[in-house]
Length: 300
Length: 306
Image (cartoon, rainbow over all chains, first blue to last red; front, side):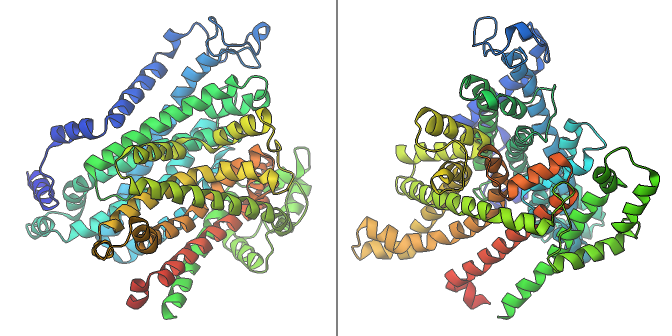
């Protein structure tokens, strides 16, 4: 009850009175590209989930008699150097990209929310320590940070788990910054003061009253973190330090077909275009959502 | 002056934190360095001796302090694989990365600023729409894809440039474009939004009212202020450039810092990885510092506040 009233209050303050439906309608009208992108994403998810039913081949099924074939009706995108069907590997690679794009940003979102709320709400030493830690994380070039984390964990877990953990650990700092700055301004809001005065606990205020007002920017931040995680995974795999064969990952496929770039460019082209499509779709969607949900978040 | 000093001092905890974090992340693996250095078939005796020689039997805190002391003296340890001081290896590779980054930055600035300005003056008309969609596509394309595409079309199909880099200026053009591509996209988007915002301010109306031509208003008045956030962003791009250099250097086989980092991870060469990460991170931190000062120098409003 409190929270909904508070929401209305805040929305009125920043001049946004329309509900979710109206926002969606606005999104469709203003930004058809974002809507198309949402459909593309759903389509890719369905393709990845139904992969075994869409292709007669298995992910790592080799056919050494049919190596490096040109695209044909049997192999839509041709076959690679071990005679594996490229189309099949693209479908299975979508699973890796989607899982890595969706789950690690979610983990870093949770870490970032908790630390950002704590920093903004408690202030003082807690704030100093958490924000310096965030500064430190953000001063590493992102790819190099994930490379170090991969190095450390490489001994203990399989490559996909490592990428998971590395991306989740590398991504929380920017979330924490956004949540902290919003917490700082919301902390002084009248409705929070009111909640405090009737004796609502600190944690309840943080999670029930402040967090809900951060959600629009968090949705945008999450949608924009997804493509950057997908890009990171494919880059790591392209460099040969990400997903390890025989698993299928788009970055790894580009890496393996690099040597045939000049004789059989389509081998590298298919996975590259796949990466581009999914990343573009998430970026367009994130951009569209930002325009609708959070006009204050700065353009990248 | 006091502000400068304060800002410089605020870097110290971050730098120490960076070192500590790298240290913890890379040394958390017990016994790892020795077993890598020796390979598999060595007696426990040899292992113990080497552990002692490398100070790995000391408490972790003491190891960290001797590491920090070494770093302050420019000693980053010895590479396991190349058996040479890491500092030497890095200093040898660094000029290649600098050359690449400077050329990439030039490309990104020229293309990014031009498209950004054109997009801003044609706001919401076709050129703007096209450029902004293209720039979003620019930031969505993986760097290795740009690099491979450039290699395929400009080096293989049309033999304009060499396939891999031999250090000459001409051979660095393709890597520079590949690396600058993403930054060009972000600079264009930033320039556009910043210029559009400035164009709505009062002093621009004044300039127009006194009868200045459109070009003179944009280039003589608006651009100066619109550049402020763009310039800060350019310095912040240093971080993503360092990440990008890892990929570009790998595709075009340039023996730079990024290449060292990839090799270090692949060969599990801990001191080399530690050194390259520390080096690049310090460069990024210095870049951000420079951006802060540059901003203060360029924007008198901020200078007066100080």
